[in-house]
Image 1: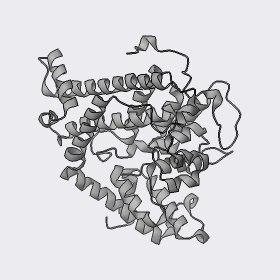
Image 2: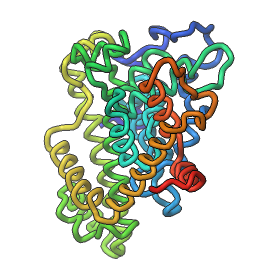
Image 3: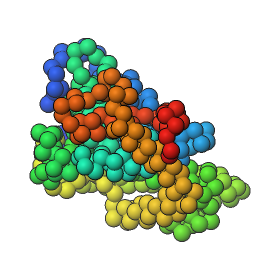
Image 4: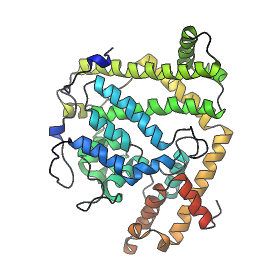
Length: 382
């Protein structure tokens, strides 16, 4: 395994290189001190949508407890995992970090319950998908710069924000959507951000589930990845209490999975030896991933969380409440478009589709607490 002391400075041939970026939609001069992807990272960090992640649900409703993850802390954990792996694999760390920091910008309030509700509301108008919404935010909805709409990010960063996209939707995205039509892969940096996202939420949802009391350490022994890590921790710290052992177990799980990600991806790259980043994109299967044994254990963890945490009656009640708020707000603004903020007011001549998209943009940008306040202020039945 590559150690921190041995991290190479030079990028691998298959990494995305700063000087070979496909550029921005609106041409800008280069910066004397920052690379294109460093500027992308900084623009994301300074945008309003990024700050709003602080008050958006990850799993537990934002504000329910001071120590549960929010979309913002989840995003930071994803970036930390991915940047570590990118350094070891000689990938572009700045691009990897920018993708990670922007990957959840499009998430509506109330987590996946909010997305499900908003997608249902938008059924007749193209649906709603948070990855596409993130692209809308960075391309058009953010208003920070005088010279162009959105954040005007590099093509490679925008590519990485699109984890999922239907072929129908891809046709409207030009060259950015081509890989979904041809069933090809994004850059290694984008692939790495995707896997880091899964690793982060599986493990921190497990940690939050334990903290909430909805999961008990005893039942986690059914999960082989946890059981193996906890047994190892118990051997190292025989006098530790159950809470400390659970924390050590989760810490060990993350280390094991991330180490496997680095080692397996490194072996895949050594075997494939892609000539450059475009050769990576021409492939039909990803090169970033876990070994079969660890992937199997990781999927087992994901299934456990789905059955025991996400489908827990208490969580289902929270999801139902959040979804009801989104439904009520959507219906209200569709019936009262004059109450939308001026910058989101749609062109009336473009019809119901344009109005629905403007309403979705407004609701998707709301934090949990703002959505709740709007519902109460409008006296909506949610």
